[in-house]
Amino acid sequence: MKKKRDFGSFVKSNIIIVALAVFVLLFSVSAKGFLTVNNITNILLQISTYGIVAFAMTISIIGGEFDLSVSSLMGFITLLFTDLAKKAGVFPAILVCLAVGLLTGLLNGLMVSRLKMNAFVVTLGMMMFIKGLALTYTGGRPNNFPNPALNSFANGSLLRIPTITWFFLITFLAVHLILRYTRFGRNVYATGGNPTVARMAGVNVEFYKMMLFVILGFVTSVSAILMSMRLSAGNVLYGSDLTMSVIAGIVIGGTSMAGGSGSAVRTFWGTLFIGVLFNGLQRLEIQASWQDVIKGAILIMVISMDTIMAQRKVRKTIVRD
Image (tube, rainbow, N blue to C red; front, side):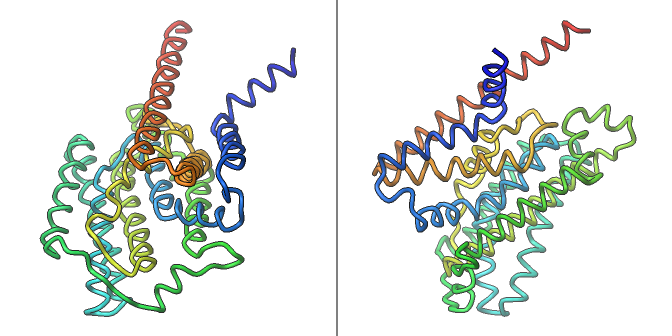
């Protein structure tokens, strides 16, 4: 009986890993060429660009906020980087793009933390503003930037792991260490869990709320620059599904949208699950529209379960009190 309880507890605590293993097994049997070194490398490459942003968004969601504008910011940064790199050089282009990301995050953060505006409204407005700015900047046209050196760097590999995947892994490690072992991380959890209690404990809630958006803006710019280097182009459409994909991976991984709980490790597994699922569906030649249906259904199911569990937790707390 004890072994059964231990097994059930393990499955419940690691449901995303169990689900990932099941899908890997299914696709290995049904999708030709799925379980090969080249395809595994391809999956890692596919999840890396968005995954970098996912880890920054994880900090934001744990802190009780989220940002809809990252999708438009990514597209705009790819256009800005490719254009400035041709006109002013690669290094100045990188500095300007990082500054734009920081400034965007700072503006979002100040409006949410200082002006007490709703994050959904603020970032929705910023998303529309940046998208309009991007369309105006190039007249809606993509911007090509053929640079063999940068393209070779972004599409290269080290120890058979793609370069961009190394950025993904480094970001994962950095966010994991920050959230788990630093005062900043502890205060982010406190801010997202109960900002009133955190404020009474001496946490500068407004500062941490602001920093959530600043970090996210900066990291989104880094990811967009890497995407531009890899594709040798910029396009307003790049990253159009970024917000949905990132939040899907975070929530499926087990981080609660209610804030105050979650981890980079959970986001890693959730992002990998999304990558494996879509790669498998593509290899089975499932239509893209049906892939969106499946992704949306899984996301709704996971959010529903998260909401139900949160409600049960609240009811148990009330009963105890």
